[in-house]
Length: 104
Image (cartoon, rainbow, N blue to C red; front, side, top):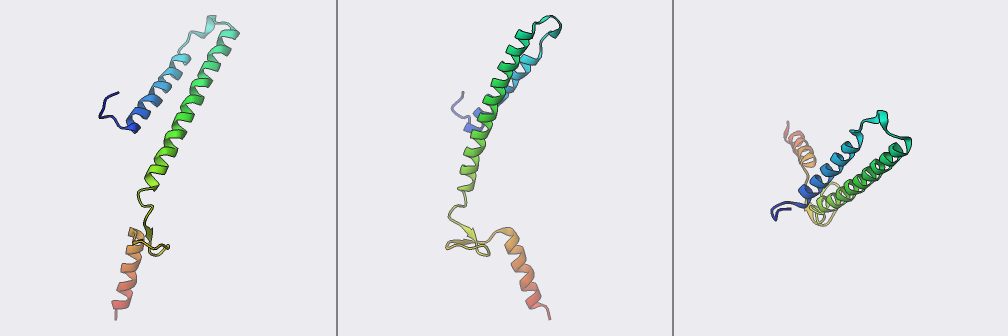
């Protein structure tokens, strides 16, 4: 891990490593292995997949919280809110409405 790496980059590397581990468990010569061995490999694969899904969900939850906090103090004036900013679709609507008023 380098000091310049973002949390997102580190998590992507971890997920990539997990996927690589999954792939390693699928690259077997199956003709000569026992049922017990295959069951064991499937269990290991299942554990890695579960771990990866938990990591992805955790990271997605963290990013959703982070990203929706960007505009937490602002709400589109057409939607509601005390602190006002106007989103692009609403600006477009306002502009079109103003054109209708100005038209003879």
